[in-house]
Length: 234
Image 1 (cartoon, rainbow, N blue to C red):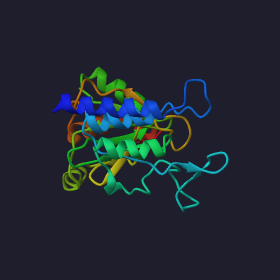
Image 2 (image 1 turned 180 degrees about the vertical axis):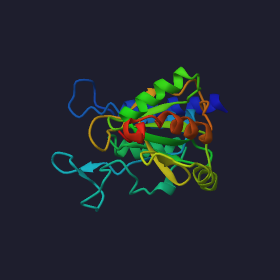
Image 3 (image 1 turned 45 degrees about the vertical axis):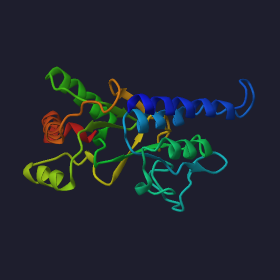
Image 4 (image 1 turned 30 degrees about the vertical axis):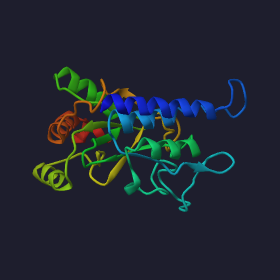
């Protein structure tokens, strides 16, 4: 099956090359987002969809109708989140028509989920977890936040986990069932670009830690800030 999918993916990429202008011509779309979307959908079987993107002469506004959008360009709109798919034909059609659209992963179900936190705090926490010998999975990084990918979990399971904790840093955000996560090489909503701090290893689904282990480790890593606060708050 993987060999068949690989041949189909190569045929799609070969067809796209015929649609691109010759090197050196203006408007040459390198389509790195399409390549990344196809890799997610076909190699890893992660359901993806394009984000709404930006509009305006300087691309400073979100293309959605909300003038006060807090995540400009980096969220689903049309198509909506339920349209996320692993079908390479649909993925190719989306990014051929919108080659700069952000790449979104629909989290939950059989797809990875994530826990995100402020970038500076995340960098410190990851160093501390590495020193403790904890095994982490892929990590997505933006200029402002990092997201640690974890194994799929249900909202009920997350609720039970958080209820059992005496304290969970408010800086943590959870991208679980019915959520989404911006993936590389998308433009970040606040400027800059999304990148892999730690890339998924190998083909297919990468190994992912369980949500309980990651949250417990992050809570432990957050203690000890001056004034009794949380290290993950800044």
